[in-house]
Amino acid sequence: MVRIPQPVANGLRTDHPVPDLPFIDDSHIPLDDPHAIQAVGRHDGSDMWGRQDRAREGKGWIAFTTDPIRHDLAWCVRYHPDHGRTVLLYRDGDASAVHAKWDAALLFRAGGYWWDGESWYRPSQVWDHASETYVRRPVPGATTITAADILTAGTGDPTKARVSKVQYVNVDDAPPERWLDDLTTWARHRTADRPLTSSVVRISAPELAGDQLLSLAEFADTVGVTASTLRSYLTRDQADIPLPQAVIGSRKLWSRPVAEEWAEQRRRSDEGLDEAVAVRRGDASQPAGITEVWTRFAQSFYAALWERPDRRRRWALRWRTPEVVQNLADELGWTVAAEMTGKEIVPWDDLTQTMAHALVDEFSISKELDSPGRLFPAESYTLGPGVSQTLEWLIRYSPTHARRAISYTIHETERRLNIPRPIIERSLRETVSPGGSLDSAALDDFFDRVLAPQAPGEKTPPLDAEAAEAVILQMIKDAEEQKDNEDEE
Image 1 (cartoon, rainbow, N blue to C red):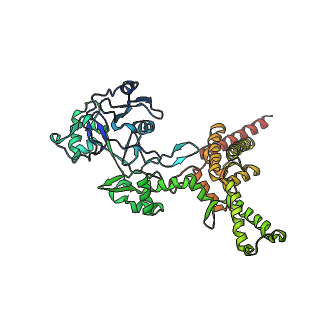
Image 2 (tube, rainbow, N blue to C red):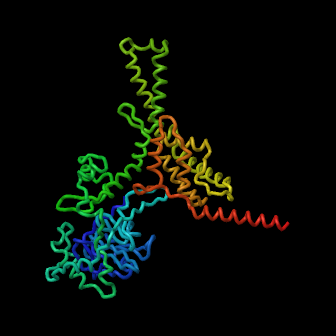
């Protein structure tokens, strides 16, 4: 997931102040020119650094520099020609991470909720492997709270405000007791060319209301883990636990959709894919195909060691019991099954690449065979039995490699063959049949975790009805023209 480090302070010339952070004088940094910002930190032989880049997904630029006075701190700037700039002070070690992830998002609030200049989105957690991007989930009912809204509701006392110099910053300081005082002073420093109504401060949304936020225990209950497990993840910084949307005292609170999307991403992870097609045998849980190999070799070894009288006589009398031999056969069978996960028996990476190219080729052939003049466009394509059965085998034996093959297939089939993604995904679902110990429910669960993430209750979009109607009208027109020609002859 995308986790932006927490800033230390606002720059005094920022257009979008972060709530409850102090304001720091940034007049010693040239904020109007990204190359000048970069140049501040570019000194050979020093512990300073700076960089600037054009925004890849949006307008404007991004830049950062180590502060020339405090080398343990750095200034990060995101500029947009329509929405102004955000100026924030970070720990110097966090600046590169902020710079790398600060692009489409103009600013972050409430533990990772982000704004692109038009809409608010939830923290980026769910990764779509085919498009290699995080799924963007808009926030229903989101409202932008501006500086004008806050200052209209209540005026602070600028005589009690605290605007400090960077040399006096303490990163462990508590938030200002009356941030409204500081905000009032910041507003007086602003130039008249950008009104306070354009300064974004907070997001307000139904899912972020205080009575809708989850405690740690409620978070754990929502995602299906114990509170102690979740607390352990937080303590050890494991499992990419999302940032809380609010902290009251020492109590962390999360929005329910953020918790649910964290659980969704866990289901779609490599471990989650293994779980989708796993079969338990005793205390072990492995992908269905691996368990099948274990069972098959265990039975084979048992037959070889016990069911042949000439071999059975070689056992000492006290070891000559079915239970002891069965345990040994299980161990031998598991040895072979475990070897399947390495490269010694199956060249997984090579097989994955071959599988992906075979799938793309199947879609290419199917599209060529699809009649361009058919009345309705194809809703799905049928893949050849050899390819579909091999994909089913790969899902059973190594779901993570199967996911790689499917993701590559979707990406390349969309790009090279111009087949809509819903058709590709529908074809894969309908073509692959359950096999061995992999039942239809497990197969559906696997595809749910691999294919395009959808919002709760969202269904695969229907095919383009307008395109189908256009085809039908064109066919009617062609038929009428042909009849007219025949009448003239």
